[in-house]
Length: 192
Image (cartoon, rainbow, N blue to C red; front, side):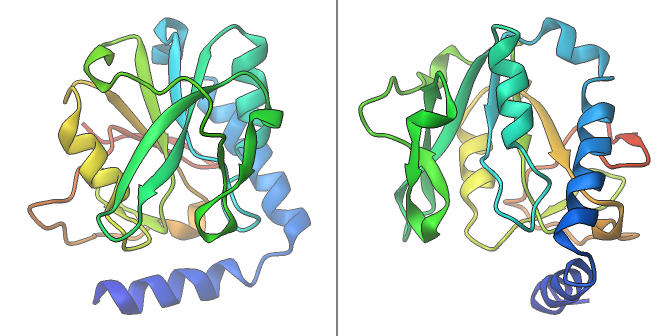
């Protein structure tokens, strides 16, 4: 199936769920995320701020902040070039509507030095669809593939996904960067 067709199909599946159902599934996904043994060693989390139709990350952000984890959120720097940078936040108050009205960090915050990324970091990534091999279908901008290509390849890459977003197989191209784990409401998938 072509990427455009698959994006449409996943959006149609997503639209069959109420906001209340998605919130309940998000809570279960969060519970599974915090079962990851690797998170015990994570001191820095790179995490997106969800929209109403994605796995809710706001509660996750608050939980990480409460635990003393450094939280970095992406800001689109150049939409045409698919360029984003991560900025450290201390609360949800550090966010403002940005590109495509998605909440992003304010510009006066500390920017992540990408060269500092080591095994104390984890990135939690969005996407429209995933398979159990770690292939990811994003929204088409290439932001996360470009970012992951620039940084330490050992960065732990975790995707949050509703079970209905999983497919048997995604066809990856040479620029696609796979995730290491996919977390759903039903399971933790080890892709590597």
